[in-house]
Image (cartoon, rainbow over all chains, first blue to last red):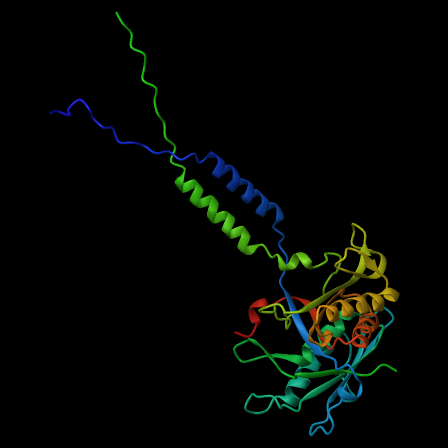
Length: 161
Length: 161
């Protein structure tokens, strides 16, 4: 019995890819159109106890550093003081504040005292950006490798009059 | 003389590499698409700070408050300040306590505690600090104690490893 005349040709199975490609291109266009390039946002935390009494530690060994920010008529930073010492105004004052706080609270071994605390007394008219800058200047610092590390954990706002 | 009909050429396009590339493009756009940023209100021009660290994970319970101004096409302030709330409405400073009371009640009704909710403040850089403090005080009044302030991270690579 010969099967010579019955060459079984290789069967080709073709899956229809047109629909898949349509959907894939639609997805691609969707993601391209909805893409929004936004700069990354960072955070600065602040714990504000519900009661004013809880805002103050009972008997701090290290009195909190008092930072006072005063605004000019346009909401700019007119003057900045640290424990009464005038650090001037403008962005340079925030640099000086940061350096002064680092000098005060960072110990010789590079650690920060747990007792370190800062009280911020902020002029109500001051632009919010300076409040954020002042908070960042006391809360964070750079380690020798250039990484941002926490510095003063306890930052309080003075009660409003 | 018989003329044979020419054989129809069967041209098969190999679509596999194209589909591979398109899928990779889709994956790329999905990964870089920052869905978290879609909650942010574009009317709020955040302050910039080098110490602001992008959060590794969003807090489990978060109340996002976008505080800013209405601006025209040139970026000039036309109205405000407002709380641009997630319900799509803009609330004036006088209405903020009502909104926060409603949010706190909503949290309590779900069995949560406002003290466990982080209030994330996205405030415009030019907003008076007093306005932000009004919002903080209103939030404290209804039981919120944890606050985080957003700023555009100018050095996102400087975060703690």
